Amino acid sequence: MKKVLLAVAVCLCLTGCAGGGPMQLTINESYLAHPDSYQEIGVVEGKSTVSYFLFLPLSTDNGYRAAVADALQKSGADGLINVVSDLQVKNYIIYGERNTIVRGMAIKKK
Image 1 (cartoon, rainbow, N blue to C red):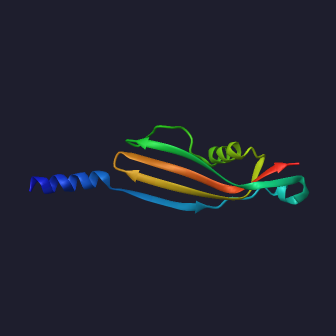
Image 2 (cartoon, rainbow, N blue to C red; image 1 turned 180 degrees about the vertical axis):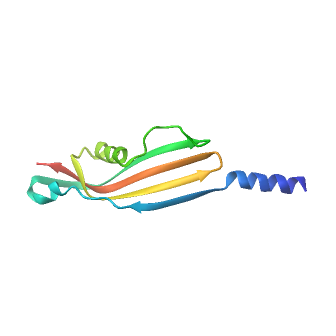
C-alpha cells in the first residue's frame, strides 16, 4: 500500500498543465506603404522565456519586444512584417515557464 501511495505522490509531483494561444498583433504599416523601400530576407523566429520557481520569476523578460529583438538579432534585419506571436505556458507544481514566440518576414531597408 505504501508503494502505491508513493507512486501516486510521485505522479502528482510530475504532472502539470500547459496552455498556449495566439495573440493578435498589428503590423507596422509604414513598411507596407512603400514596398520598394525594403527587401524581404526570409521568415525568422524569435523566442523569449521566463522561468518561475515557487511562483517567483528566475529571469526578467519574456515579452513581445524581447522576442522581436531575438528574431532581429538572428537575422540581422531592420524589421518584421506579417508577424504572428504565440504564448506558451507550462506549469508544474513548483516550476513554470512562459515562452513568447514570434514569427515573421524579416526585412532590410534599402
